[in-house]
Length: 463
Image (cartoon, rainbow, N blue to C red; front, side):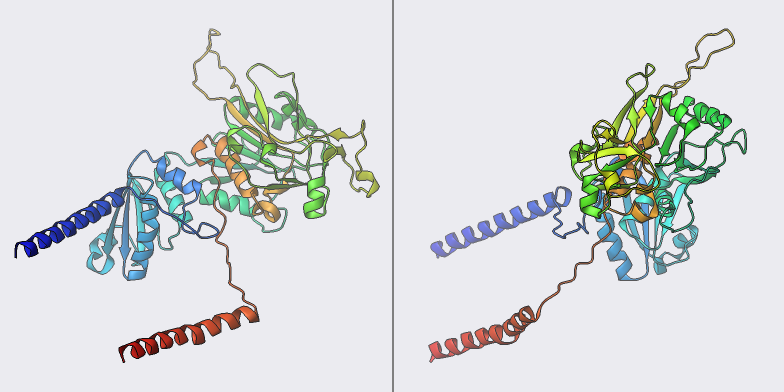
């Protein structure tokens, strides 16, 4: 009897010990756990932008999920659990709409399946929830100020509203999704046309700027604001070129020839940047390892003679000659015209894009004393290419990330300089006839046969 109690007590202690370990492991795993995503396109992993947004939250975000059916609640839980893993600033509660009609009415909900994201006085309501829409809603309710992006008009710049290959519709839509306010600007239309603009974009102008417009642009930069220039081969850019020369930037009317573009796209005038070493050591291109494509490029040269305080550096460049070089631009080239001519052509590596800062103009008082305005240096980025962000190429490779990261840096939102996730990839399983036959035979013949054989053997053993 004593022996029975001895072994029984040992068994009970062992069971309690195992249960204790399991409970402890469960409690620890609730707060400290690791997620693994084995899908090819990382469909169940938040992209770098989403992670950066929630990790950098400085105030609480209250999220109320109103649901009518189980599906909306489950999809909300799956999404929000991923975000809550990275931040404790997200406060989530779930309410069944039918049981909380007053709360739903207070928020002005129309759809019984809705997610309310609120921070301070700002509020966003989502009915179709996904990672991108939720991240952008969090941005909207937590940003203190909406950044205004102005696109200059009046010189043959690229359009914003059409989906044609050369226009900027997709780029504008991407900016709107990330809570940028878009405006079109005619520089001389109004004395205060540029006053409320945070970043000015000049995308592929064909016609020359007036001297009075250049004066306005110079004042805009002197005020510590940001400028993005997207140029192309062909136009002379006489007045615009004079403005750039003040910052040590020279843009000659050449066109870049690239051997990698010839191999990849069968077009020598498409620059394909594949190697990470061709991206500069700059915040825009930190850890940037995606391929980017630049059709029809104009070389950007940095002068060594530059005023004190002006600092520019390449962010995208080509390989060296004879892999890449630039030739004097003309409308048509024959096959023989594109060969590299040493001493005549501009040898690579060639800068495709440069970025830098310019000191703001120091204001003086009535007695000539300097005023302390606490303005940050102006930020400028110049691309010798306008097509990489046009509709035809915006979603190609890493072009979207390059454009959006440039905007993030220019608007001083360095936490949004990230690699955004590509759209989910559809990967069907395509089987040939032999593979289908093997699977069919295995499932319908071999597996049932093994089970039947095991049953016959057991019956034979019992007899």
